[in-house]
Structure formats: structure tokens, C-alpha cells
Amino acid sequence: MSRLTRLGAGLLAAAALAAPARAAEINPILPPETEAVFSVNMRQILDANLVKKFVLGQAKQMLAGNDAAKELKELGLDPLKDIDSLTGGTWGKGDDGNVVFVVKGRFDLDKMFAAAEARAKAEGDKVKIVSEGKYKLVQLTLDNVPKPVLVTFADDKTIVGSFDKKQAVAAADLAKAGGNKPQLKKDLAALVLKQDEKASLYMCGLVDKFDGLPPGVGGGIPGVDAAKLGEQLKSLRSVAMTLKLTEDVALDVDMGMADTESATEFGGTLSQLVGTAKGFLPLVAGQNPNAKPLADEVANTLKSSVKEKEVSLTLKLSGDAIGKAAGGGD
Image (cartoon, rainbow, N blue to C red; front, side, top):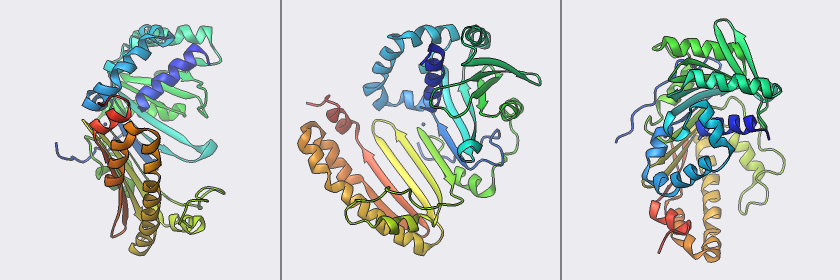
């Protein structure tokens, strides 16, 4: 992997690595064809006590201890200070898949473009500077990313990107304009508005068609009929996942089904899966005594439930149990 490829992947990972609940806002850059929305609140994650205690120190060491530190300096970017949030949407599958995203923070545009131009001269197969209308875009070819990513700036606080050049430019225009009417489909917009704006991260999307589980997936799970599970998932209509990091961790997954009957059936299967997962926890605790408090919390807080057409899965873990499992306990 080239230095630039590592840098680009690191930046995307940093971007892609969120009081009372308040409804999330719909970002106006997301186009009407969006099928799923994601949001990562980097500032909230980095300020969370759990992250400060167990992650931030190691992250700083990693950034300071390799070639990425020099490359980030050339960009004038400190990802632990300069990136606030990432919001984006995806649609399509395979070769037709696309993404549009916006990264909010503080950016030195001159330094970033100068670094990109230098890389384009040195590694033209990985980086190119391309033009579209009034915009210059940086085209990045990254390992394990199916298409080149094109990024540009709406201003010194906003980076936008997409797999599609015209889409990236349209997103930049919308980000500059601000306050535009959201373009999402009605059902997806309603799903986004149900998410918690203060979450560390959330992802939600509509399921237009589920063709069943791939061959071999779901087989061999005690007490679960894989074929039946695959049929039940064909009634899945939406999925939303929220992760909250504070001093503790809270995970919520909500799955909207076609009707109450399908929700009840799938809820029963999910309950079986939860029970099976809990059955393995004593083995985990036996192999690592430090993990016993964490295993006990999973056993007590991992729950599934059904309410009308919605099936939910929840999990809560304390920072103390996580610390002991990581070897930081007494």
C-alpha cells in the first residue's frame, strides 16, 4: 500500500470512524435516490469519557508513530482535533453503488491542495486532480474501495465527496447554499428524523427487497431454522442502528417489518438467537476471567423485543466492565 493510499484510507476511516434525545437533522446534500443514511459524530466520540480512558492515548501514539504523521502534517490536518462529523448516504448495489458524504471540521485548503498536487505528480496512478465546472477535485484510488473517490471543498469547514464527479460537485453546491429543503424520500426522511442527533453514530435505511440469506449463512445455529429465518427477513422494510458512547456503551438496533404478524415471527427467531449467544458467554468468561463482568453484563442487558411492526435489539455495557475485560481492572 502506497503512502498516499494509506493516507486516503486513514482519512476515510477517521471520517467514517456520535441530555435527552433530539431528532437528527436531514442533510440537504443527500440526493433523492439515497437508500441509507449514516452519521458519525467524531467530536462526541472523542470527548466521550470511555474513549478518553481507553482509546485516545493509543490513537495519539499511532498517529505519532508512523509515516502518517508526516503526511497529516503536510495536509495541515490533525484528525483528533480538526474533524467534527461525517454524514453521508448510499444507494445502489455492486458496480451501480454510489455514496455521497460531507465531512465537517476545520481544514487548510491551500495545504491540502498543495499536498494533493504533489502526490498527483509522484503517484499519478493513485491520485489525480480533475476539474468539473468551477471545482477542482482530488480523485483518490484506494485499496479495497471499489471505485475512485472524488473529494472537494465547499469551504474551509466542509469537505464533500462521492464516487461520481458530478454528484460530488452537486453536493458541494448544496453544502455552500445551506438551508436547502431536504431531498430524501418521505419514508427515509421519517426514519432519519427518528434517530438521536446526540448519538455517537447512527445508520438507517430502507430495505426495498431482501432476497434471503446467502447460501451457508445462518446454518448450524442451534435451535434456528436458517431457511425460516431467510423467509422472515423478506418482510424486513427498514433497519436503524444507534451507538452511544459516554462513560458506557449503549447499542440499539430497530428493524421495521411489513406487518405485526411478520414482526412477531421474526421477533421469536431473534429471541432464540439472543438466547443462543448468551449460552456461549460462560465459555468466554472461563477462558478470560477478566471478561466475566463484561459477559455478565451482556447476559443481563442483551435483549430483544417486539412492538407492533418493530423488532428491537438492545445492549448496554459499563465502562468499568469494558476496562476490566481490557486488562485494566483490579
